[in-house]
Image 1 (cartoon, rainbow, N blue to C red):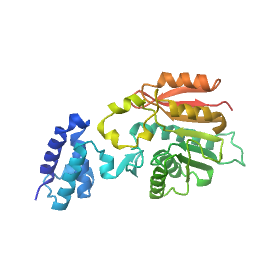
Image 2 (tube, one colour):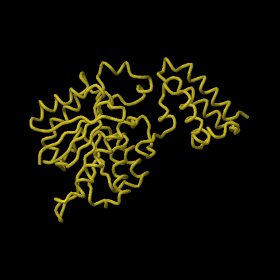
Image 3 (cartoon, one colour):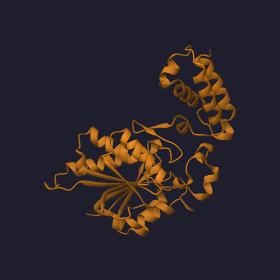
Length: 304
């Protein structure tokens, strides 16, 4: 019976063989995650017990996963799970895999919602703070926000979160994740192209992780990205076509005094400022950097 160490070494070697062609950047980490998933333990257990024997069924599952990874299939799809904002989300080809940089979108939305809830000027007979997550995909942003608010003790009636996606299958996945994190009653999911068909807004906060990859750059993306839905990646000729459509809708969708948070590509910081200036004169916009210091979220504010 093979040991953890032997299987890891074999898996790492196999992944390194295909690293260049498939764009695999972390062979060791990938092998550790896939072996842990096959065995049914945490990755730390695999690392801590190199001499532990691995049963034949788990070994066979691991070797199959390694071969699928060699040709580029994302680890998240192979495991069926992706960690985001401290939570484990179910993921599959129905939706884009949540990225760590998108956590900034959740943090900024959470901070703004809390400011609105605790603001001294908030009337006693207040209405709920309304939040719209556009292009929700797996539901990661809306669900992470709902969980964060629940942990802070915010009553469900104080914040109304709506999550929208044009792909019905993605919405099914998002609903599954919402139920899995016990916030199915805190997030309303709606099928629509950008905005709900019956506009329930205007919303106080709009968060959006829309496609922003330039069409001519799709072919140059790493192989794992080709397994994800193209509709969630292709942002048109300049990468901002879909985002521009949302900008055009903001005067109707965003409340006065509202905040829109739009994730952008790391090379689009200057472009988004120009687009907002041209399409939303008089609105304020600044770009928030991610942890790597790269442009990541356009913060667009409408005057009260």
